[in-house]
Image 1 (spheres, rainbow, N blue to C red):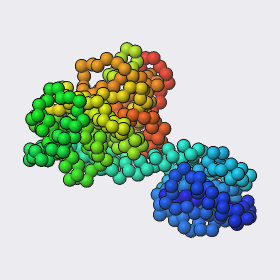
Image 2 (image 1 turned 45 degrees about the horizontal axis):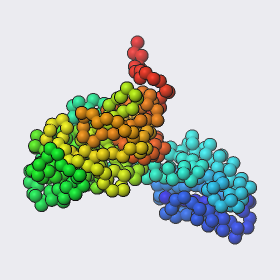
Image 3 (image 1 turned 45 degrees about the vertical axis):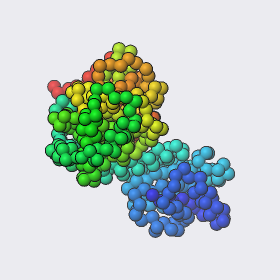
Image 4 (image 1 turned 180 degrees about the vertical axis):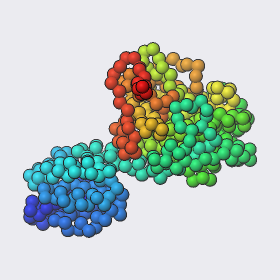
Length: 436
């Protein structure tokens, strides 16, 4: 990305003062640009040819609108930064830019960019700029990402598309991989192939309940097989039709846990592509590991979420308490039962490629009883439970264990997804389209 400071010598007649101001402004930026340019009365404007994907445009005075808008046309994305706002630059420099009409210049440019540029953003504060740059970085990652659909989406997952073509407009490449390919890697995996995974999960487990040594060996051979499949296809993640793999006599739960915990990739269960893409989006926006889970409703408006897999170093601060269990529904394989932290802010997200919509909700983890459902469980009290219910896109939710809602909403909108909101309503109601 390139950052350009636009100035007019009508307002900055002293060349030394202008150069010093630009240098001070560069030092105060809340981000590191690949290069910074001072464009004064159009000088050096020819260096803004759009080679970079992103232009950060900073008006330092009035009489720069034409130059700034001309440069913006050459870039895929433009972030207009209000550097004159107190707190964004040293006070004397903020005052100087205000005196030299930087504020009306920026407003004038934004009035044009917001209706004419396909991807223009306005950052008023340093926090705005950081959030927007994070969202743009995630956008570049997602639009170049490759996901594997291992097998077919499980038939009971009715809320998600079963055809990869639904994801074309999001820029994610979906590659089909047969479950047989994973089975063959599993069947030929040796004890030495599984050894690093066995060591990893034995080292983090507080205890092992149902599984025996053979169960752990088989589950770790499956983890090896899934990781090697991702490597072979140079993928960024996978949606795994995991129930069919149970026919091998083990589960893929440990492999999914390992991928989401210890690698740069993502893994979603049940061949569910909406959640896999949601995980790709969140991956670049959070410092925590991601968890995919099923939801269940409680009478007190809290909700229980559960799944038979979870990252163990969830917060990136060390392993959480973990028991190795069998897979809940089948009773075979190995699944991590992770004790998730209480009092932790969470962001729950889900996209729908079919409808072009997304949900982004925030809440906090609270205490609650264990239920006879999947092994890892968390009770969430959402900030707005009614909004959660009235915008639900499906059973599966993806969690980041921090509040990244603002960045995720930005990313959704950049990807052309409509972020659903709902008025508070104590009774969830459907709103079918009138077909009369």
